Image 1: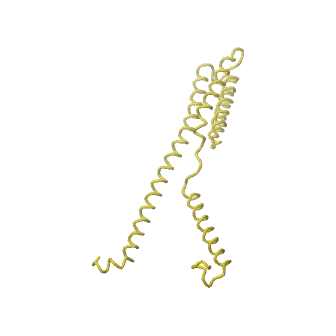
Image 2: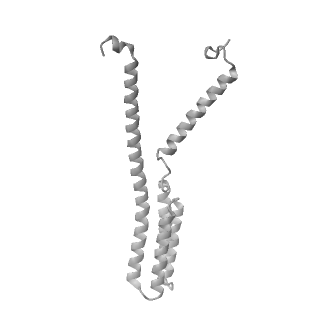
Length: 181
């Protein structure tokens, strides 16, 4: 018994046509998601608590072992803890880490050369570190805002497509012309 759509057609042509349609649907589906802006987040939000705990332990160790160490050595140790934190959460923007590292390196150079000392160096380091963590938080906030905007655009596009489809269906409905619509 033959399947009705295949009546008079070769089975290989039917299979080829079905596979071609499925490939096109799959390609359209993948293209939609690739172009829709639903990219990966800037870091793994679920990894943050564990990474914060590990960072805090490292920073505590850096400060506890500061006897006999210079301020530059402590800054290097805390920078390593902050870098490990960024790696642990999978932070994707290496530029932020590089900028922070460059700022700390410049600060350490100024501290070692006596241009800035003690409390002032510590305040500048704290400010650099604050900027680093603010940039990390901002990256995720920007990601969430972008996702919300993309979702709103996609929803509006889908609603418009639905409205157009309904208009087409109404125009093709023979009952509309009979009822005076």
